Image (tube, rainbow, N blue to C red; front, side, top):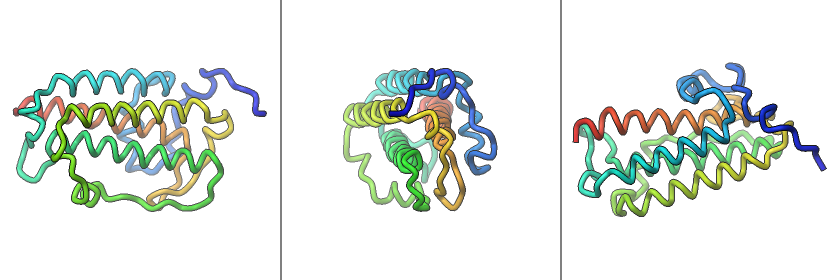
Length: 183
């Protein structure tokens, strides 16, 4: 059995720039310092609270032609977190398989998020976050620094946790500044 390492030793260390591809830097940098699991829990609650304040009459709102609706933005958060969490799981378990990227627009074209009320999508987003948090809580200290290849670039398990947090914060900012401001 692997000995548990104090949370501060494994959860508060921000990933090094060599732990992720440059295109993820904005997400990693958006996540605040501190315990990444506490961040995921706190920010997940904040996003849910914000979304619960959006009336269904605005859930189909797009801030510009060709942009996603609020429901689709939530669906994108669900899809992306699932994909990033699977990458973290596989790499934490020493899976050497290089994983493909995903095109968010292709995923959206194959999804039906606008067919469901926002009130049904929010609990799904919360369930995905809860699953991510539980998964990351049980990763060994050594596994946080394991790496794999996804989207043609090497990434560490630690970086994936910070990417998940920063990705959510990025889209929550867009929700506030572009969707709810212009609705």
